[in-house]
Amino acid sequence: MIEKLLLKLRARDDVSAEEEALLRGAVSEVRNVATDVTVVRADVDLFVSTILLDGLMCRYKDLGSGERQVTELHVPGDFVDLHSFPLKRLDHNVMSLVPCRIALVPHDRILAITETQPHLTRLLWFMTTLDAAIHREWQLSLGRRSSLSRIAHLLCELHARLEVVGMTQGNSYQLPLTQVDLAECLGLTPIHVNRTLRELRMRRLVTFRNKTVSIEDAAGLKRVAEFNPDYLYFEKRPR
Amino acid sequence: MGVTPLMAQYFFDVINSFGLVEDLEGQELRDISAARLVAIEAVRSIIRDDVTVGLVDLVGRVEVRDADRQLLVAIPFSDAVELRGADAVRAAP
Image (cartoon, rainbow over all chains, first blue to last red; front, top):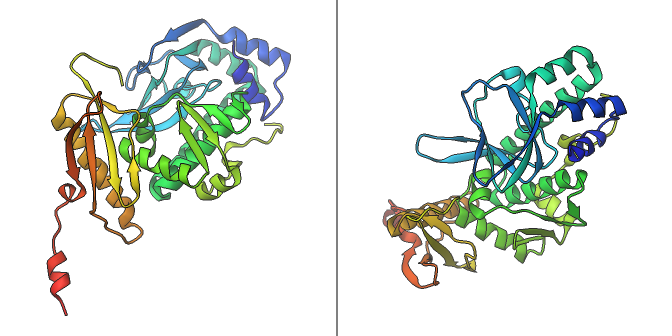
């Protein structure tokens, strides 16, 4: 059930059989969630954290005008609000973008892990710091990358993150997002996203059609994006 | 976005020097005036991009179409911005 979480962790460090059993045992409940459901709400006290098993979710914040910024996309294997364990409440929402399957982990079980399992605790800590690294890269994109480079970067990032959990087929992957979803990630309008995707397609770098991303020229796409996967910390080493 | 009975599907094709960018996906919106706003915002976003490389190209339009791909309204890029000083700049020696 939490296989993708284990793949994500084992790409970065060893996870012992005992640690794996503890993670599996930490799950209290599995739920299905429909599209566009706010699964974790800002400003309420939280007592569980959520692992995304299948689907796509996002962290987002809205302005009073209704303008929405997605601050991170979550792929299967992500612990989407592990930071709610120390924070106790969040300053942002977490929403499903497609039908999702989630696993709930009560905070008291995470507390028990932190009190008895120093290495597993560091692995949990690693995951929240990895989210922070992804946020920094998105800041760079939103603040400084051109529209073309920004979209290219997101498509490179998702390929890298999905590959590690076994969800890519060579240079392509399923991305069941709408132009509106992408626009909210990229700080652009949906029509602008459509136009920029066309430019990437015309340059024969990548196509996004029928919810499938096909990277035609990986080196060229990475060049346009200035994509360097170092911020995803894929190296396997003791943490 | 979820579909509610009040919403309708609108498609936004962009035609300018870049060519035709056809909208295959559309957006669920309340009415044509909401669709018009979406088109205007998109044009501003495109112009903002162009300006960063030193270009303001107002030759273009957004065609708003309904679910049957019938043209509802065409919004020229020039409707999205108010230009000031362009004549003065042209008249200057």
